[in-house]
Length: 432
Image 1 (tube, rainbow, N blue to C red):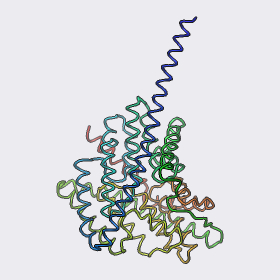
Image 2: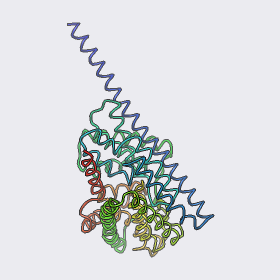
Image 3: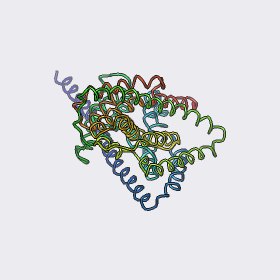
């Protein structure tokens, strides 16, 4: 009996070593995602600060820097980093639908991730209306996909999902939002095995972010609560108007992307540079017209609105246009932070007749508009709760998000990220 027993013991030890090797590789990947998110945050903030300093000294600098920067970013993306354009979330969604690792490699690779980070930072230095959160999703998915290959882990789709969630969690310091985003937007389903990976990746990446940047809130904190009938009336107003505006953005983005692809196909070498040039000039004009408010992520404006400061009534439509133009230009960069800024400005404009109303309007407008853009109401209200620690407004935020989601579908039946992901899937089939 001793020989079989020793055999089983050695086999269990071998399996244990293999299991622990896979765990360590997985944990290491999550740590890397968190570390990259921290470094990406610092680089993005520095780039935006440099742009602000330069335009303060030389007011007309954006008229040169924006168009030139947009053209360079678009050119480098097309020539050196194909697959790095846009937010990055559609690429991660598309990769989970592809069956072969070689096909996923064209959307999720370390080379693409490096280009994504570099060119998003350059875009912020040039005044683009972009965020780093969507790109962090693609980077996180790419890192965890590499982990799957190096560690011999079979569930590559699950690890892509886990990396995406870890990217959101680390970028916003919002672990719950990362988990909900993965379930609601990325996978559109609940799978116990896969969501275990998501949970562990979010925890580890979140710990790295917390240990480096501290337990900060993205947009500060507020304890404003919906109490009076007038305040409750803000909920459907901000939800419905925000949802319609968000649906309009999604529809324009999807239709505009298709039109741009068709237009550029006629004369690819020339037209692929004309579009980013025109978008860059528009960004510069909008920024100059709003005294620089539409440049960059919109973080400062959104935080100011949540803290009770009224924004100019022209901010949200100008930021809407700037974000749309940036996204259509084909350069790398996300729409999460700019969309939240648009929503804050819209809500502020709808009900901003006092500091308390402005704060409530900003928070509810963010929920309605963001839910309308991405058509993910759970992610919308959870991410805003975590970014403002406004736990007393759970029901109003849920209502505004659901209303925003419902009204947005009147204008955009297809969810934005999934509509854009379909384009990447078509390109993958065309390469076969």
